[in-house]
Amino acid sequence: MKVCKDKVLDLYKSEGAEGKALLEKVFGKEVFAGRPLGVWCMIGTRNDYKLVKSEELGKTPSYYQPQAIGVAVVTEDAAFIVAPHNTIVAQWSKREAGRNGCIRDTDSLDSLTATDRILTGYIGTKYTDPDGDSEYDFIGAPAAEFCRSYSRRDFNTWDLPTVKQLQIMAKHIKEINACFRAMGCPTLPMGWYWSSIEKDEFCAWNVRMYDGDSDYDFKYHNSYVRAVSAFQI
Image (tube, rainbow, N blue to C red):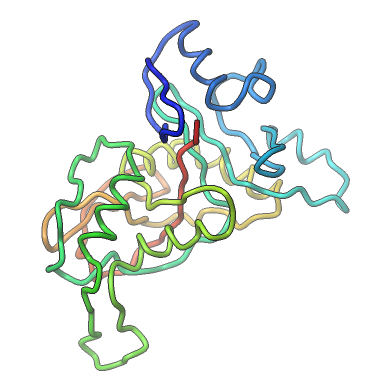
């Protein structure tokens, strides 16, 4: 697989030496040296970070609190980071209107493009709470906008996860939450999470973190939201 400079990578399918070489390009040879696929605490800074297992990080003296970049999830199909903060509850968007070619492929791992399409499609689209409580009015697409606004905090671009990414997170939820606890970060609640994949004009897909089950729901309903980020190469 050809790896292009300055492109976002969150999907790869490769085997043997090629797969190891690709991971080294993603993580850097020194960072990834000897590390297998799995779930890792990602700590440090943009220019100096490392991957550590939760049990290893738990041995660190309690007075030392590492700077958490997130939880790195690396499988045979994907490589992405789960944001260290926070899980919120939000609507996906208003019921309809403003849609502009949102991604409907539930097997997609391209959260960057999916989030971009949501933000473009729903820009300026106003939702007015039918109960008349203006506190719940909004413009745009809250779930995707929350994830993208998180990007201002550090060097990564954060996105609303795809269905596939959320299912991978659900599969490794114990390891992911162990990492968050070790880093002193909020864990992922066991509920339904919005994905960046649309079902139709009225509904979008969400995933249950408890078991990875997927279903669609009305966009104006509330679900959990947690940002992810593709590795930059």
